[in-house]
Amino acid sequence: MRDLPPTATLRAFEVATRHATFTSAAEELFITQSAVSHQLKKLEELWGLQLFERGKTLRLTPAGTALAPLVREFFSKLETTLADQREQKGRVRLLVNTTYSFALKWLLPRLPGLARLHPEILVTIESTDSAINFTSADSEVAIRFGHGNYPALHSDFMFREQLFPVASPTLLKRFGIPRVPAELLRYPLLTREGADLVPKWDAWFKQVGLNTDVLHESVRFADTNMTIEAALLGQGIALARSGHVEKELLDGSLIRLFDIRFPSPAAYYFVCPAGIETRPHIQKFRSWLLSESHQAQLSYR
Image (cartoon, rainbow, N blue to C red):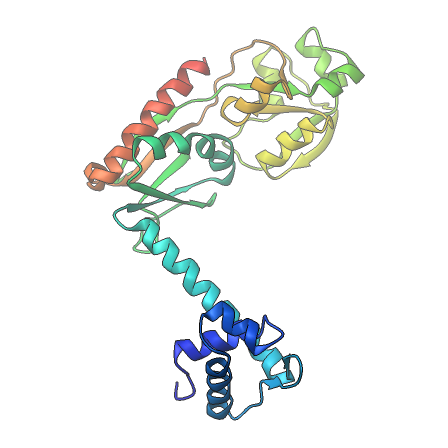
């Protein structure tokens, strides 16, 4: 740390790297040309390096070229962090853990409403499909997809989705609109791989009274969002969960096929360590979340 110069000297160097002359650098810093020259000379003496080649214009030496981005990054990060800290002053941070697909499709579109209602809460979202143990490094609260079995944790039921086939208008124009569920067997079907909590096509066909081992599968996906995206691109018909296609059904980019009720066996739950659910900022978030969930559940029936 002996070679660390005063901040003003570093700033003079950073500014000078972006200008062709001491004069223009001095104008940005609101100091004299000689003051800039003096600061840079002091820095070169301290580091034992020539940073600029003097002439009609300033040019960085190889040493100056190597150091310039490091100094520039230092000031950029300092300014960003200070701005972030000032913005957070007087606000309380809440770390929420949930799955990526749920955060993207359901939670994020609703967060502006929380910000209007409780601007003092600064939500940070972490996404993972893994179980959360709420250690000291974990999030304060989580939203989980399961059967409600969360021993030693506080949990609240949020909502249960419906599952149904969806297709893009482009695909339906190409293949025609199926009149009965059995006709789907001739369509390319998009399959969500893994995730035992999410029913597959065979479960849906069984629900509508069809037992079949032969499916015209198009592609298998390991991610819900990829499956929906493929349906949007007209690559096949996806078996969607209602909470993941709200926007697409509303704007017509996806069309629900058949008005057949098939509730998901798993549901969404708000969970947190027992006892902290009454903390003011958590209680506010929880109340808002359960209110939004109630409205969603009404629309998913």
